[in-house]
Image 1 (cartoon, rainbow, N blue to C red):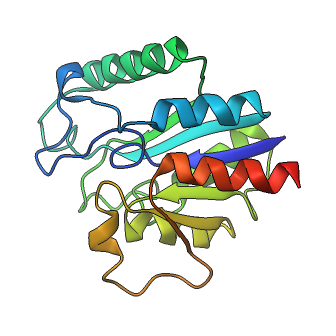
Image 2 (image 1 turned 90 degrees about the vertical axis):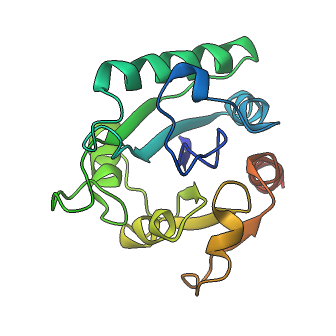
Length: 180
C-alpha cells in the first residue's frame, strides 16, 4: 500500500493564527484537493493528522470539527479524492498527552489502525512539530512552504527534510517516484 500522511491546516487548507473555527473558515489551498485526488488515482492512501487545540481552548467543539472534516471530505470527493482517515489531537499544549505533535501518538495510532509501519512513509507538514513527529516514527519529513512553512524554513530542519512549494509539488514528486 502506498501511503502519505498530511497535516491539515497550512497543507490542505489555508491556516489562520485565529484557528479554523467553522466550516466557513475552511478554505482549500489552490491545487491541494486536486493533488490528493491525483495521489489517490495513482494508488496512494492519504491520511490526515492534525493538532486541534482550539477544542481544548474552547474556540469550537468536536461536533464543529467533525462538520469541518465532513465539508473537507465533500470538497475532496467533488474532485475525485478521498481520505483513508483523519486523526486529530483535541488537547492543549499543556495537557501532557502523547497525541499532540511533535509527539508521535497520532502517527502510532495510524500505524495501529492501518497495520502498517510508517518507516519511510512521506509525512507532509508546514511546521517543525509535523516534521519532528515524522522523524520520531522513522517517516520521511516533507515541508511545504504554504501555511507556516516559510516561517518554519527559518529554523533548523530535521536531516533529510525535503522542501516543496505546496502539496501539488509534493504530489508531483511522489508520483514521479512511483512511475520511475
